[in-house]
Image (cartoon, rainbow, N blue to C red; front, side):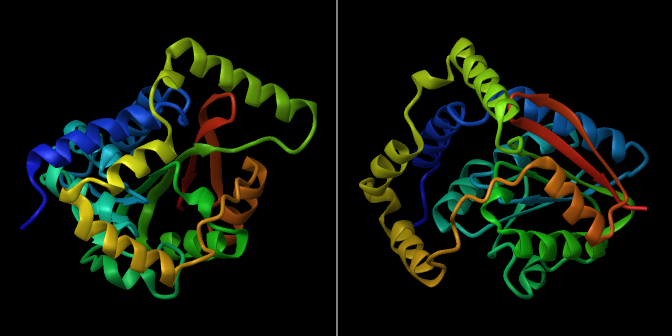
Length: 255
């Protein structure tokens, strides 16, 4: 039996709340990403978008609402989150299971035309620099001329006084907006793991975790390092378009 809509709705809603603890001004960041995508696709009758590390489809659903004619491919490695997205946000995207950064991971996407925009939010920081470079290079090959990568994530400053300041500003902003009232990441996963409706999916997740052990460490790189890797991958026009504390939206345009 597939996952029920009621169960999917419950866990996606709880996911949305717990993510507010970590993504400073999360909804505004989603809106900024959507603004950029809409602007880049203004002349595209059927925009072709890729959502990297889509989780349960949070960003894909917002993009589908803003650009209803868009074709969105949403990719993630987690079978639990993917099934939540497939069920709760079924019409938003075509969901694909793949490990971003692995060899030949783009083959699983089954793309039939070039991408207009690739987006990501709070996902690519799991990749170490070599895998990030490989991923950026792959995306440069998938994007049409004039296309772009739009990445919203935490980009810390280099170690030093400025690093502490940007982190402090983000922390205080989160306190003012109430994000810390919600359950945390670990609590969400502990609670979801004992829901009988998700038991089969968690069995798949455990198998996936065993196969990819050691690949999920955080590697939060500063924004200048991302810029260097993007240039090496073939993107020549790169700029942050929004920032609160360490949380930024970084745009890289392909010639």
